[in-house]
Length: 233
Image 1 (tube, rainbow, N blue to C red):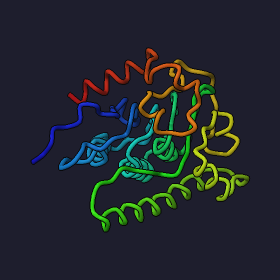
Image 2 (tube, rainbow, N blue to C red):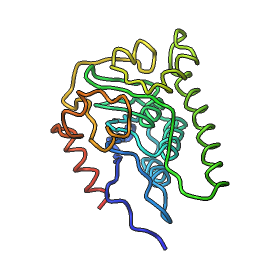
Image 3 (tube, rainbow, N blue to C red):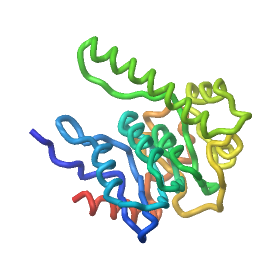
């Protein structure tokens, strides 16, 4: 039995011209659910459909989500031959921050935020299956540490990154640039960093200012959300 496709699709893609494509990752990164094709697989299929582009602009405003889906999406973007520029429009938290690291260049406006932490997931199964999930998370944690380490500057050590991940660290654009997570800070944009209540409750150090407005309320963000939902229908 194949379950229906997720109506809350969190990404969209389009070709701008023969050399450039856009990818928007807006909202929680989620799999399609049990007995269905994964979101990562659909993402890969659509990525291939963009054709032989040499430039790709990836726009992110996401509180994170499924670590396995997100890790797969990072790998797809990272190995793509196009020059990838990532724009963190508002928030790149949790696994969304890992996806952002796929950028050859990463840009954040000064009112955006980036959050890193140790990966976690939900699992159901017997003891053997649960141990496998724990082992898989340990492996992904190591991969994520190396992903951040490969991007950050010489002053940011592996110990620094592990500590920040363990403590669930929220970084402003200036902080992210100082550590080397991003390459450029730009002026503030309308898509201010915010997070919905569901994800705010999952994280332990969510800045209060991020919960003062519901997620995706700005004009630009709502337009992207509407576009993504219309494509998924």
